[in-house]
Length: 95
Image (tube, rainbow, N blue to C red):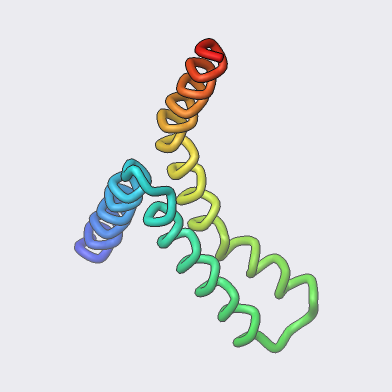
């Protein structure tokens, strides 16, 4: 039971960290955790000696956190995308 609570606490902290990094003005800090998850997911198939389909399935399962972190990143970056579009529209209106 305590192990489950620790895992949940770590997951919540990682997601909160991803939200914080994704909301920074620069887009690069928000990509750090997804890239780290992806690099770690490359290690799993290298440690397996089984059929190709099992390696692919394991790699896809291990990449679920990468996809989730990228989803959080794109949701948080939506505000900056809209802001940039508005600035471009204002510049076009001035011309």
